[in-house]
Image (cartoon, rainbow, N blue to C red):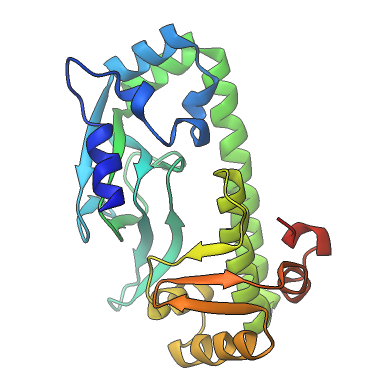
Length: 249
């Protein structure tokens, strides 16, 4: 319900300022723009509301659009030649979709929950970047962070143990919550354990086993099927192979 309300708040209406109402603005690259720049950005965007399971982009289709997620969550995945699916990432409010791609999308993106996004024609957005150097700099900074995240994911899949992988995943979600202004202790998990396993290169059984181990050690506390509380952030960071301070709220 919350995602739906946020999505409606960002809907285009001649009487509303969608950028002023957007709850993800402070997390997005558009946060660097002054009022005039925001008005120009809003003028070239379509404000799209999506429902659970809706496809935002499909692998192989012409990459004509970019998306800035403003509410909800999205899974990004690739299909292997034999039909198997590999999840390569999860997107949340403030994340950009379609930024690092060529003429065709190299991935598919499907909504995990209901939500919303600002959709831009790629060619129009590029013209906007040429006119707004602050926005271009913010986008380049975001791209560099995405590249670092890709390197971290390669390390996770190639070298880390099952415990380190899950701990890293939870620590990353906690860091996202802190960037959004939260305490980084209560983590929402809109994805299933099977999807977490897919993303981490593990089996569902292994994810369940490691989750139980972290719960028994008191590192986490399960609140519901889709949420948990991090009880020992420093220990979680240590298990993830991070500096102890990275897990503190």
